[in-house]
Length: 543
Ligand code: G6P
Ligand code: ZN
Image (cartoon, helix red, strand yellow):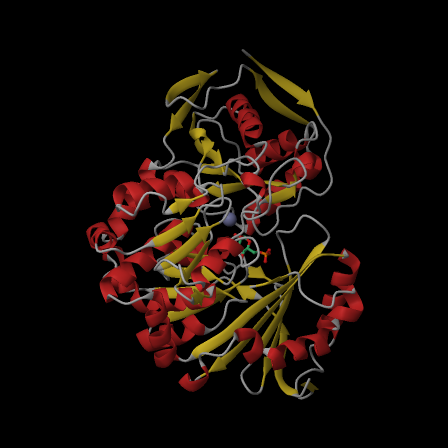
C-alpha cells in the first residue's frame, strides 16, 4: 500500500452552506470533486495527523463509495483512528454522540438530510468538530479558502475496507474501527428517558407509527422502540435504509410523509405518529387528529421536559432559530429562564450549549434537541414526547390544548417556493432589503408595519457577528413575517416565507392555521410581490 499524491485544481462553488457542502450527487461524483473537498477539510481544520475521526452517513446513494475515498485520504493524511458505522451508517445525532463519547477530533458526516438521494438527487458532506457539532463559521471559511487554493491531494492506494464486519483493520498506520452505529446512541437515550415508564405505557396498549422513510433512523427506531421499549412489531415502518430511500423523499413534511399525516387524521389513527428525515436529525410528531408544529413542539417540550429523568433539574435556558415562532419565548418567560434567538443552522446553538447557557433548542424546520449531543435529534424528540405522555398520562391532543390554553397559541406556517430562478429570488430579497427603513408606519394588505430589519446575530459567547440572516417584518397587531433564502437547496433558489400570529383567545385556538393566517399571508404577497417576481402563484410546500 502506498500513498499517491494527485495533482488537482480548485473547483468552483465548494462553499459550505447551512449544513456543509450540498450538491447534486453526480456533481459530487465528478472525478476529483469529493477528493478536493475532503483535502480542503483536512487542511482547513488544521491537519488530522495523529487524530481520531468519526465517519458515517445516512446510507444514501454514493455513501459507500465516498466513505472508502474518505478513509483512504484520511489515512494518507496521517489520521490515527477512523471510527466508522457498520455499512457506513450513522444517523447525524448518533455521529455527534460518538464524536463526544470517544473524544474524537471531529467527524465527517455524509448526508443531504431531507433532500432526495440517487444519481440525480442530492449528496452532502459536512465536518463536525470535537464538541460533536457542525463546524463553526470560522472553520467553514477556512475550508472554503482551501478549496480555492488546492493543488494536490493525498490518497492511499489500498483495497476497500470491508464495512459490513465489526472490528478493526488498518490502512497504513491508521486504524479503521467499524462499530455498531446504534449501541452507544441507545445507551445515551436510556440515561435521558424513563424507559420503564414508556414500556409500561406500551404494555397498557399505547399504539404508535414511526415512519423511518427508508433512511438512517430505521435501525435506531427498531432497536429502541420495538426491541427495548416493547412497541408492537411493525410500529416502525419503512425501517430498512435504502440508497434511494425507496424512491421517496426523506422529508417528514405533509407532502412527503402524506401517508402518515393521512393516517393520523383518519379513524384508524394510532395514539402517536412520528417520522424522521434522511439522516435522523429531524422529527415530526402527530397526535390523533393533532399535528404539532415544530415551533409548538419546542415550546411544549420546554414546558414538560422536567418530567424526563435526564432533565429533572429543569432547563438552564432555551434557544430557537430566528424564523421559529415565539411560542417557546412565552414558556421561557414563565420559567424565568433566558431564551436566545439565533440564525438558522444548528451550528449557532453550539456555543450556547457548550457553555451551559441553554439545555434545549429547536428550529421550525422540524429540529429539536438538547445538550446531550450537538445536533438536532429526531428520535430523541420522539422519546421525549413518549416520556411526556407517559408521565402526564395525557394524549398529544390534550397536552396541546392545555398548552395553548395556558400560554396562548402562535398560529404558524411556512410557505416554500422551490427551485425559483436565482436572480428573481435575489431580486425579491434585495427589493425588501432596500425598503427596510421606509416600511415602518406603512401598511401591507391592511396590516400596519411596526418594525422591519435584516436579522443579525452577535454570538454572546465568542462575539462573532453573523449578518444578512433574513428579513423580519413585525406588525403593530403582533403578527410577524420573515423572508429568507434557503441555504440548503441545490437547485436555483428556495424562498421561504415564515408567517405567524399570536392568539391568546382559547375560543379561537381550534382554527385552521392557513385560515387564521390569511391576512398575514396576503401581507407577504403585497410586500414581496412573489407572484409577479417569480411567476409562482402558490407555494410548493406548506408546513
Ligand atoms: C438543516 C440545518 C438546520 C436548518 C435547515 C433549513 O437541516 O441543520 O439548522 O434549519 O437545514 O435550512 P434552510 O437554510 O434550508 O432554511
Ligand atoms: Zn437532517
